[in-house]
Image (cartoon, rainbow, N blue to C red; front, top):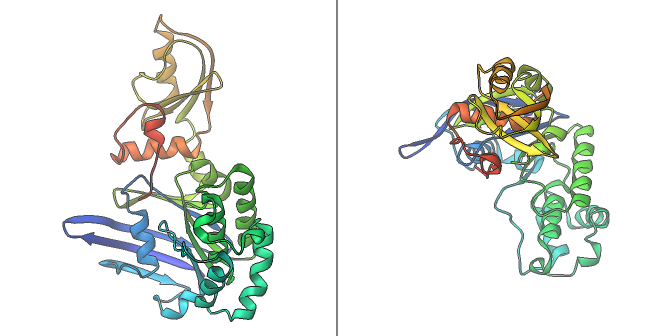
Length: 314
């Protein structure tokens, strides 16, 4: 049975339709990604799931039924607006937040110490939250989200402020949570983290779900939409190329819908100003697919290089 079922959900704020006809399911033991550009409707969708907003149309069920107050103790939710008390000491703050999720004081403290030891926060337990670095605060938020052992974890931008060592540690924790049978919903603009962690995704653009399914299947469906080039010349102005970037001497091109690699090859072969030493049809990255689909939907204006790929919170 699905832990979360979102069916044809819509939400309007005044004249603005923030979400329209979004549907997806999330199952136990999977990490599910909700993706989309700035203003796409991701956060609005999550807030409807959490019953912070009430949807205008469609249905949402958690654990097979409409949202009930009792569900809160089965959910670990870390929103984009973080919720630690800055002028309070870290340990009592985390104990208090755990008791709000139904743990008694003794159980909360017993669970808290190993979590703080693992995430290198134990020595800082008596510091005020505002004295901690951004990365330490992020790890504390993750503890607060997981300490009551929820069945559903919903987390927005989990890797904000984390260095590579702690990013790897948090990824290990998420995999452990998944292996324990918990459902994890992750919203992030870091496409490589989504690609590494998520079993399935939904991509929301302009309030609609435009891509939904297993990451591996989506990548197979978009095979042929990415090219790797090596050679002399400029390749970022080719007709039919939505995005071009250069990494380690190689050009990575993302092609628009209906544009074949053969068309690009012919255009290059007829251009005397370029010289090709390597041409490869590549499996597109999730980032390539994201840019392709969103630009085709009109959710991002075509821009060049990194600017086109920077996706903020929605």
